[in-house]
Structures are given as C-alpha cells and as structure tokens.
Image 1: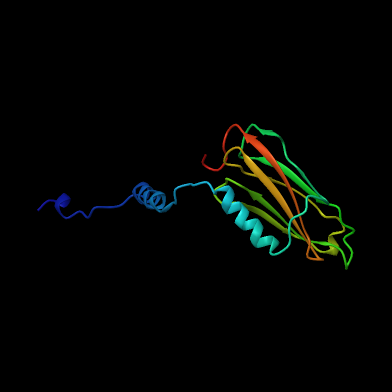
Image 2: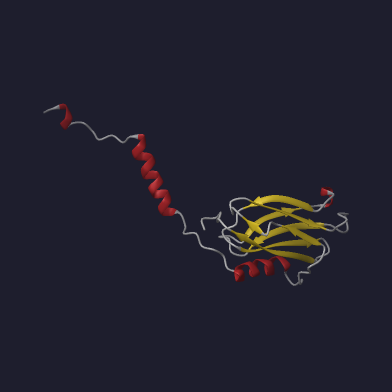
Length: 155
C-alpha cells in the first residue's frame, strides 16, 4: 500500500472559513422594511393614552440624504430639565427601516439640556419621527421626510 492510500483528508483554514460563511449567510433573515403601520404601533406603545403634541420638540435632518448609510440628525426639546419638569426619553423612529425603532436616549435632570445628535442608517426615502416622553406624562412628536438616494440598510 502506498502512503497516499492511508492519507486522511485535511481541512484547510480556507475550507473552514468558506463553510462557516455559507452557513452564516443561510441563517441571515431577508431584509424587509417595516411599514408605516408598524411605526404607528411603536408610537402608540410609547405614548400610551397620551396624544403626541407637535410642540416643544425640534428634529433636524437633511431633506435629501445622498447616502443612507450615514444620515446625521439632532433632536432638541424645550425643557427646563428640573426635578419636576424634564425629558425622560427621546425615541427615533424610521417608518420603513428594517426595524422602525432606530434609537432611544434616556435623560434626567442631570443632563441639563434635552438635546441629542447622532447618525443613523436609512433604507430608503421615508418619514423619521422623534418622540419625547416628558416627566409629567405628556408626549411630544416631530416628523420629517428624508429622501434617500442610496439606501443604507440593504435597500
């Protein structure tokens, strides 16, 4: 018998990596956009019985995002940020991203200012909302449409 007849097949690092990648790709979910109705359900869950008012909150977004991979936004809420009157949380919701809840920021009077700035990904042209939940139970909302020319969430 020759030496090649008894030789065990070996797996190279390349074979292992390719196999792992193939299994991982099969396990990935298909990207689907949320619907405006799903975004409304998120807002309803956050607001509870309160009706969101269009005051005290400002949302700043570009009207046109040339690349949805990085869209900067800022939200500010007019609040004294005292122990009795402050912003508890700010929620960012994108109507047609794979997951409508983009970000949540929790605040307290120690923040001194109710203002946040961040970047997010947007899959395609859609409405973006900012919801502010206040310590007195009131809810404030601002909304703006962003036109996306190149999608950032697989779209």
